[in-house]
Length: 243
Length: 310
Image (cartoon, rainbow over all chains, first blue to last red; front, side, top):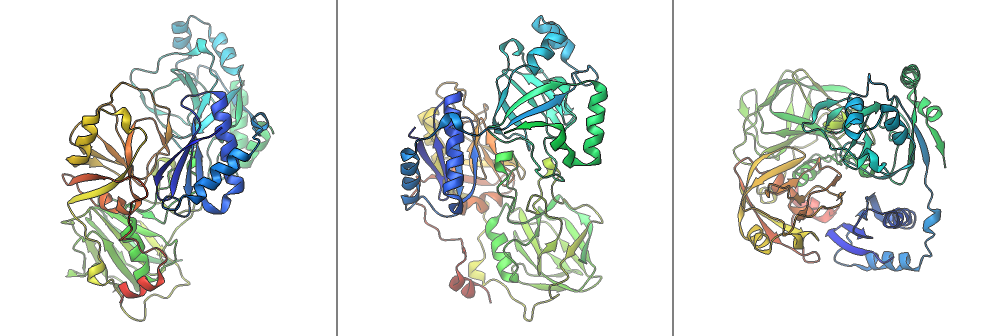
């Protein structure tokens, strides 16, 4: 697919693949992000993929002489992009839905006319896609929330939501990677850190990942938490990763 | 590591910054780094510091330090009427502090940000390949009373000769600036009249921090209410939230945002924005890409470098 190219500054350009959130547009975004990072590494500072575009920060000027941009678009168009085969990691994140952490679970259940068990089931059933990461360090924007769980955000955001809290709000679900103010309905908590600078990798998730939530007991929550505190590297044994 | 300075008075807000933290924007980590990149670059060149050395970025002055060792420094950026033991010193020119000297930065009359740079740079922990401070993720250092600033021990304490920047090359910090803006593809979503006003009028800085500068002036309204997809934002992006008053995203710019944008302040002009004080005025010049000329940046230009520093 031919992207629209937008030059944002002398060394910054964006490649746009559509105007809405859908799987096909995002497959192009993912494939292009991999393509440019593989083939043009020496010209790049970094790239930021989002729902419908990839913004590329170059380490040299691309605006005056646009031959590099032309070359990129031409090479991309010549590629037989195997969109289906774009590699995506599958990660299972443990979540404790106990009301000790799930401040809003009972109220949300009432609002939606569901039992708390139904909410937990509907939340931990689907596979979610990480479309982009932003807003907070390591904060994933996930696609794939069951429509029956669409619920308004809090009228008044909480001043502080603890890191690891799992929330739903509007059409979205997500996890707070660091303690911060937040307006989502909190329905659970994960004992693992999405972001820890003392760990390699510092960030658990990246755009394109597929994740599922696994319901765990409160005992398991503390077991996992302890194990993480012992050695942040233990995360690799805790999350169930398949590539 | 060698102890260089102890903070006596912490002032408004001062943080350690290097060039910035790159390659982590896809994980939601802003680049951070210096707000006034021009002064920062020139300061490093005056001292001959390494490309990625660390400096202290100081907002609005009111800060003082006790010297713990003999060492050479330079102050660049906004003139904060600094004194050593009560005697005025000149910015943009290196100076030596001896043990027990008191360095005081007072208030600036023009500009808002100064950099205190030590010969060899300050020594501090690098996290995710950078020493730059980004508070939301608890990265870096914001100074408090009694914070100790360290130097590197493998560096000489002082230069052979005092150096400085020739006067004609000192950036002209102003309280009324015009900056060039690369238009955004969102521009057609705004009412045309409002877009015209944006590029013909003055805005005033009302509030701000390292993340964004809030402006007040003619309203920017959308033609129709449009839900935009979140997309990458950066240092210089001009966002318009629903109240119609623009915000210029600064060095700690969030990596993605969902508000419509007017455009991006070109890289070479960002320092002018950074140095604005509350109440100062700013106007914008429509500058489609391909026409920017670069007159103020001295990137890796060895010839140029020799002629600007004495």
